[in-house]
Length: 268
Image (cartoon, rainbow, N blue to C red):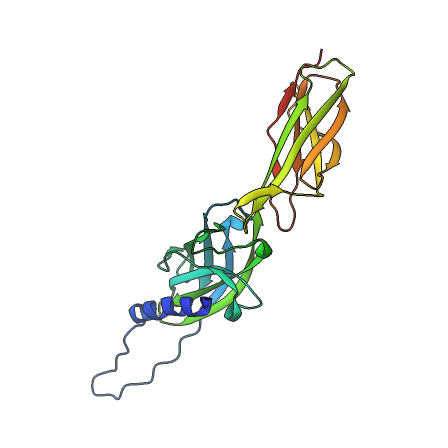
């Protein structure tokens, strides 16, 4: 059953409004004047995970969502979430705050940044499973803020890319190896399968074989290798100098980057 993200944010706001709204007062002996409607707060930005991609393996991962807003009366509270769907009102999945009582940092008298801690959980056996393979990619962000005068704004702004984690291995052989002889570097590219709760071979993807000569500080790309149907990597190079080999994958729209551990080779 879907949880309506709008309803969740609205419930939070209704609870806060009662605390934040000031009581209207009339002068002695005068009829109470109708209070002027306060201007709505302005949402300046909504950002998640420090602006970085959220790369998930097989377990839950926490991330912060910050909504920055301004209001003439100041900001009393704010909450934000990530959702997948055409619009917030029709969100298919949403990553809600664990606690809607966000911490707000005052930037100046009218502007504050309010942060909530949210959780994404790809665990296949967890009843709160949030993400599946088909949902990897961009998620939208939305938030709601409450001014100290009781005014409220709900808005959609920003994007969070949620990606499947990848892993790489590398093994160079034979070791040691004669200078000028063939050196074979094997490995495997796998990525998190959120639907099956395991890592599986990531096929037909281009991976860089990189080398760092002993004493060097930077990696040099030797060639590009394509993973086979099982995610297996294999290529042969000429051994020229002592150094370390590794495989490196740059990532994609749905999958995070990865680099294998280095395998040092002694060339004799």
